[in-house]
Length: 398
Image 1 (cartoon, rainbow, N blue to C red):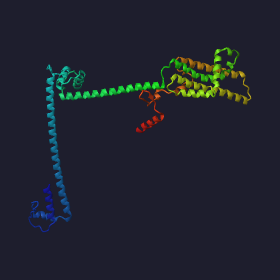
Image 2: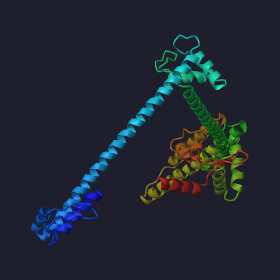
Image 3: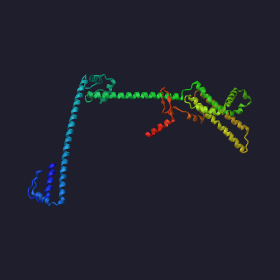
Image 4: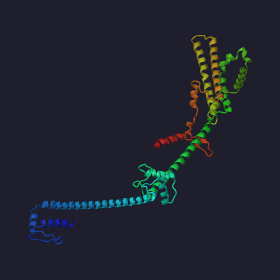
């Protein structure tokens, strides 16, 4: 390519000279320039000299690039041929090694390697004991025909068997580690569930729990005695021991200043203590709701009296008495149902509207998400503020 450029340069220089009349040698390139060539270039306009020279350079570069591409193609083809030859040699060596190993393993020379022959041969070559389970896994991997034995075309080198055994060992260790982690996780979940049950005390109520769960219903009973004033003030009521007991309890209840408020707040606070049995906590909440429900009949009676007096109507005395007796009787039946159900260890959850409202307020195990165990195995619930922060951080990550 260097000689071609020198030729083009010499021709361009001679074309610009007007004094060349004969054969002139160029020392640097040793290229002869004839008079005809000089006259030809002299006949060209001066504006075409540069264009003609550029064309010569371009043609020379294209030829050089084509030659370089052809040379690279030949080298690539040669390298591919060498790589193919190496692969063929390697495959031949592996086949020979596999055939040699096959002949060693095929003890009875029946043209196939059985499971027992494979086990015996590998233990001899690798100098280690291999379990029946591991050899069976190897057979399943390499026995492509599925006949329970290895033919020559299925047999591989000892190194391949060794690598596969190592891979199976790694996989077994990984599965064992995962199983151990899963076991620990399940054990932790069991401990956490037991701790949650202990924290909420949702166990089966004992006899003392059953007896204690009935006491909260004295609160609505005391406040509901106002509806039983007609029944309890009759002439023969004094001889009834039940009425006597109620009178004593009512006297004690009213002897405490603000007894209604004290009982309300006491039951409300104690019902939030998760260490108390669920049946007791449930009855505390239901007693509060029953006491609140007693307020509405009194409100209706008061509004009815105002409306009747404003309209100039006179309500017969027997109407109010019957209404009070019905209310007191309904209250006694409700409290009797609650007491009997509690003594049987069952939550009295069949009171319309009220029981469902109490259930909605009762904490459950599912609500105690995110808690942890302390060093003594006791459950520590997550604080609401902390739970909100964790939920917010989880949303940010998403």
